[in-house]
Amino acid sequence: MPKPRWGWFVVAVVAAVTGVWLVQAGYFTRNGSGPPGGLWVGLLGLLAVWSFGRAFFNFRFPPTDKS
Image (cartoon, rainbow, N blue to C red; front, side, top):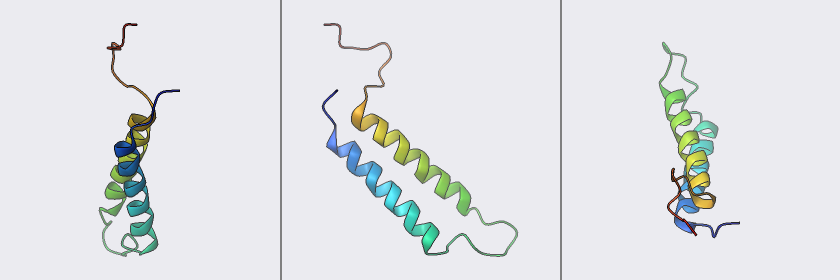
């Protein structure tokens, strides 16, 4: 298992917590013509998933480690 990159792990946790907080706070429950809140939650979710991946896996293609 590769050594985790803790900076990316922190980014992922902050993004996930912020997304959950925004949903629980009810920022996306307006009854208007369709709030753009879903886009922000989706982007925070993608950032969280991508950051978790960067924290624990090497996404470089082709791999730079040729040992």
